[in-house]
Length: 170
Image (cartoon, rainbow, N blue to C red; front, side, top):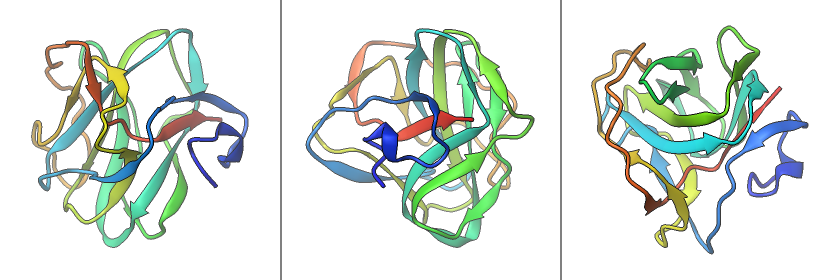
């Protein structure tokens, strides 16, 4: 299965997927420094309802714990997965707590963290082929593989970045 092809992701129908461009893929740690978070900015043109984040795990970790989530533009955590190990590689459907979640159109940050740097997910490669308003890693502190309830939203600027391959689905 290939997350670049929305028809191949488990959990069809997808309600939203991050459209990427480029000719190469690379690994991105869930956290480039243990117990910090990584953010990738994206926007949705309409409301999206989902209860699963689908992501392509390139390096699994059955020992340490990780979580994913979305923050809104004000820095409020709007959804998160429970901290857990990632025992399998490949496209993984990760449930968000309290789902289904409906987010309105707007800007969001896809976030990941972990209490280690072993697990990785696929992102666009070194050619920086996706437009976004923010990318940052080794940001604020996290505890126990869980994302904080709020963050200070980073400054936004249009930029080319390497973006994670992920989708949202029911």
